[in-house]
Length: 458
Image (cartoon, rainbow, N blue to C red; front, side):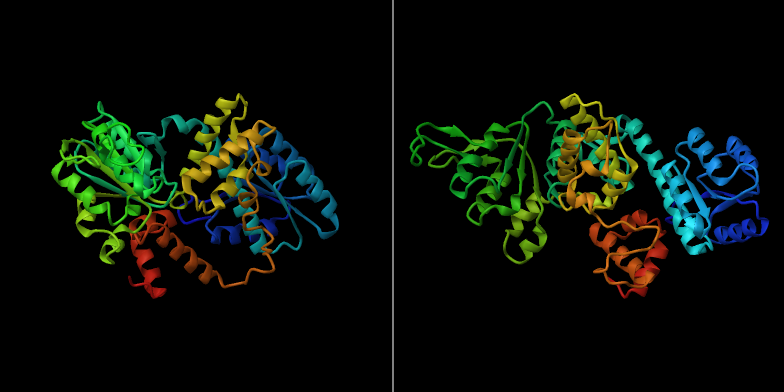
């Protein structure tokens, strides 16, 4: 379990007292809370009175054996995983137990490390099932700004920033990877701001050919160029009194950058082919997935225009840095598309949720949205299963209880896996150590010590 998870509550059931004491001592050393009983009847009494995370039961016991105990648990507490411990010559019965609802089985003599891994997986599976159910209830009550929905602390911090700047009239530069919801943020700022009664006009600067982009922004007069049969107002004038959102502003050509700067400074535009300026009162919100500051330093983007756009900077984190927001958004998209197509799908199966959490989402929220639309369209049951997910997500690498890895993946020490993961999270949040510590479940001092050990001093 991760450092931030509560201790796993394990119920051990074995009629051999020595085995119970040995297993209990080992699991407690791993941080688990352990209760052990020497009969199935006593174990059922514990479950009726208290909540446990996993049951580990020997298959051969006097009275009610482990298989019968498993059947009782599955019937009365279907979300409580059971791990069966069996002799080597009784694997067939153990497989039958798994088919009957047991989460896993372990053959004797039981390797304590393998027992620990199996328990961790079982507890993680139980908590994931609980999380999926909770998300169905939480979608409507999730924190949000505009159309954004989130629960993670990194997004709550962003939401608090957006709420503060919405009531201002300052220019905003929104940066982040493609598909993170930059236009949703721009619309949210407009809808929550003083210009909410005015128009919201959006333009993707990369989607309009350069010869037409100047006319699109500033308008043109009749006869200014071929096919200009009538005068036309540009988007600056159309957005008068409201907000103009310039997406992919980093793709503006050097020819247009000084003209945009002039329009922002003077709050006037000159239509193509015209000799008079037109006053326009707009709030500018720009967005880019490029590192615009670096482009300005390198001379690829005008520094004065960069500073004019970047009065307030909003950095949108990638989906992979948002933790459980992945499942919250997936559930919200599921409900949205299920309603549209009239499909009675209600939830995401825990195994599918595990794959969603394991995937890195290079396309961010947009990719997740497309994934859930596809899953809802193809699903033939009342829930989204692994088979309903795209192949790239379905075949993602996940840890297994047996510890088996793909043969083409090099085996590395555990410390190296931790180092890579810590640095990957730090990279995902663009070096923000506070956010990285939060995602990793570490306090900041512990993270700093690890980074110093890795030689990462930036």
